[in-house]
Image: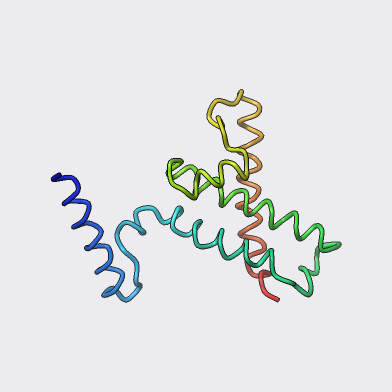
Length: 134
């Protein structure tokens, strides 16, 4: 019962921080900034990918290459969300969508390959974020 009251008070505190701080961010969001930003970016980039776009970055050969880059970025953001708390509703959905089941039980080489794919997606995010407009 005391834990529930403490959690309730903490949630109220976070809401008030978001309202009254100039940057509208709570301590909880700042403590887990990677997770917080991943949730925002994942939703926005997923919507960007679904919309009708009229081009792709000029250094790419075609729109299919652009789609593959967006998929790699989404994969990495999805894993950041999943890794934070695999028991949340969104994490379970991402687990099914991206097959994150038993990711921590992979053999050494498979885990290295997974980590490379994850890092690659984050690097692509840094490189192509300025190109996400239409």
